[in-house]
Structures are given as C-alpha cells and as structure tokens.
Image (cartoon, rainbow, N blue to C red; front, side):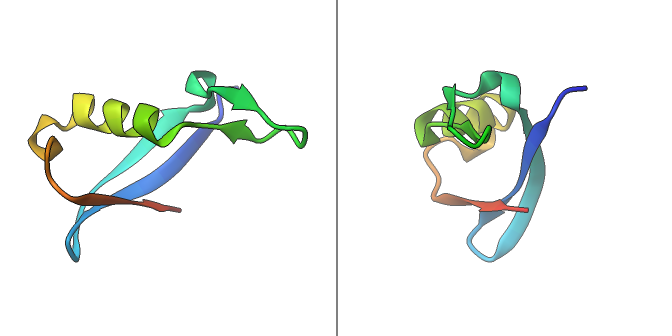
Length: 63
C-alpha cells in the first residue's frame, strides 16, 4: 500500500487545492521511518501539477 503526505495549498487566505504526494518521492527516510522531503522538490511537484501557481506566493499547509 502506498503512503502519502497530504497538504492544502493556500493562495493568500483562499483555499486552492488539496495535494497528495507519494512517499516514494521522498529524499530520504529518517530514523523513525518518517519520509523527509525537500521543500524545493515539493514546490516543483506542485507547480508541475498547477502551473498557474508558478511565481505566486502560495503556502503549503499540512493536514
């Protein structure tokens, strides 16, 4: 079974989208078994799926 991290994307105070990213894309796994992602990799993933966000000031809010 695949595991995902899930977060909401906010543009200002407005909800834009809920995004799931597979833990298979993680940069590494820490000692407790938690996937570790680089912020740049997550932003690149988000902007590839939602190109209208590229260059805008959006926030990632974990669920």
